[in-house]
Length: 149
Image (cartoon, rainbow, N blue to C red; front, side):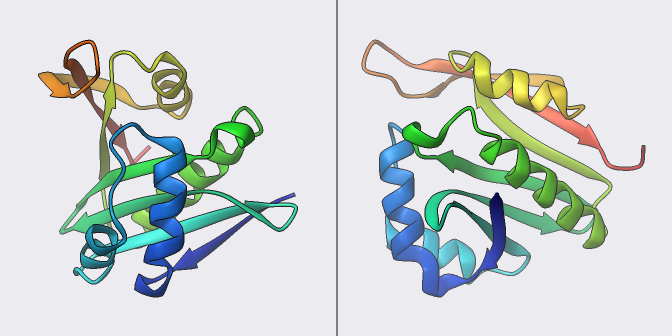
């Protein structure tokens, strides 16, 4: 069973370690700590069988929310962890008064794009050359979820 728990700045080192395993451009514990100490920012951590498997970091400002990052360790992908994290983050954004949730996803990440589309996100823009890759930068899709459905 996937267990989702809210975490605070004290979890920054553990979240940074997860981020390193999951993403090409990981954030440091200090960067995550600064974010978690900012108004409107919240993090949810996922574990499966007692093992930390991923987290989502979001920010709510006025009536809009944003997914800042979503990371799941490669060995634990395709087990519903990202879906569980995203669903809880959506519920938290709605509870905080957000009317829309935004995110950016790399165009070379079709699995993540499919996850977001399955939850109702739609493309509302693009940022050319947004994500760095060894072979060259790739665009980001800007996606939006209407929380007033």
